[in-house]
Length: 274
Image (cartoon, rainbow, N blue to C red; front, side, top):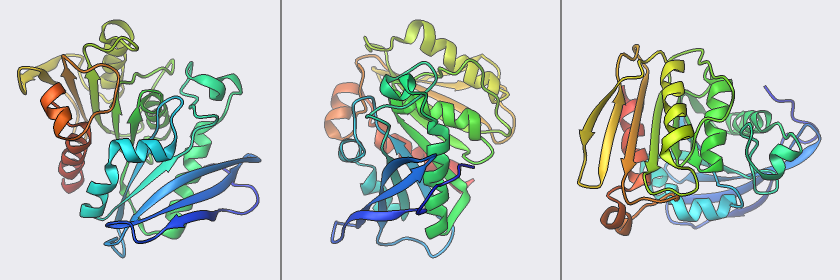
């Protein structure tokens, strides 16, 4: 785990009275580098075995904007789930070969995310078997990198418009994977790196690189990896009209055939209840 230098953490800012919970901005120091994260704490948080989502913003994004755009807090308030929104270094994550200043400066974002989870677990009774990480674009790439490094700690990942960029990936135990991708994405096209990385993730999870396809709607197809061992699963949803974005809400359903936030909550409800 990461060594947190100086003060373990302190709250820079908090907002109470928000519907369904409050938001805190917490500062921590990792390897001598000041870092921070936002934390949504639901009003109806269980006294023990609380669930935790770590949600990572895209390149040039911020925790606040991804919190607002993804709307994870609504589901978190309903289900009593903590949601952490860490801040990337200079609005970027070192996901391997991407992206931004985090890669240029060789930032150890695995250690930072270790420290975020460590700090939350020091203050709340988190269920270690119900921690998920995920994000959009550069945040999705970082989520894959963290899962490859820490599958013993985090057992599930949800990624939107992302790919695995690390040269190798091994899971120490079976994990659950949910991926969304737009077939009209000009930034990270499906053909090539994304398709290859989905197969690489399936292999790391002990699954075959054969897929069962099903039709969700005229715009959306679902693919499930075959031959997965007990406790492992890899699901991919592909939307034909979706470009590069995390989409949620009624307009997302009408335009792209999928609501990524609602689909993530439904998926987590299923795997966390098993």
